[in-house]
Image (cartoon, rainbow, N blue to C red; front, top):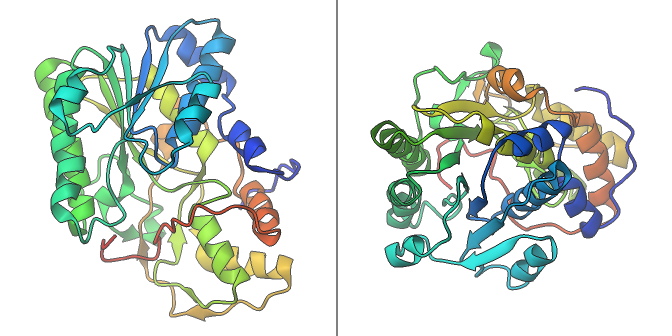
Length: 348
């Protein structure tokens, strides 16, 4: 793991949200060069609020006047609309599967498509396919004249040998489970409409964005802190600080193409679950216990293409661990949404 940058601890949620929405200079330059308003579809998810706020900040610092509009049902967080508005993000309530409601959304030259379904998909397969495969076609038709950056997942690759260092974008895909298959369906539908309608797109295969309230590092920290045995069957992983993922995703609006640009998005290291747990245990004086042993394969991505396009993520893994260790130790807020990173059969 890279050494920590020794930045001070993050004190509270307000400071955390501010840090997660702080744009890089490259993001400011990208949004200076991209014309038009930005619609964020599925803004109510874990990344959406800070990505939308980052778009506002970057646009303001670039001296660009534009609307940033966050679209969601807003059913899970009744105060989110007000927070977004305070940050300068306009909001629109919408069930995206309702064609009439989708048609009434504002026009925008730029779309960040974050809507989708993962957790609970094992019990709601039909809804999973509707959200992850049918809806992308509706969105691509509605915003056929826009630039579209669409989030996907590294799950489309399936497991790859740890010794290889992770899947690359040109690898043959092997999605495991209906969630991963539906996400591959999303990519294929978007590619079809990109080719047919000449809509410039980018498809972002995200591999575990993390912050202090959720993410793979938080999941590991919570289990170590509670003295629970940590499963090692998925013994290796990638992750990226959420602000760095937000920054690269917004920069992708400048790189869209037909057919879509596809790139993996995560950190530069293949991380050992065992080593991270032991590091946290050492800090807290806790003896860590494990279940099973590491498999020879894991859900891993090689993120070289992303770094060539947008630079290496500036936040080191050691810095994330420092922040998370301090946050968890003092009982900081948690989203209550584990990643299930240990899942190998694709059942979410």
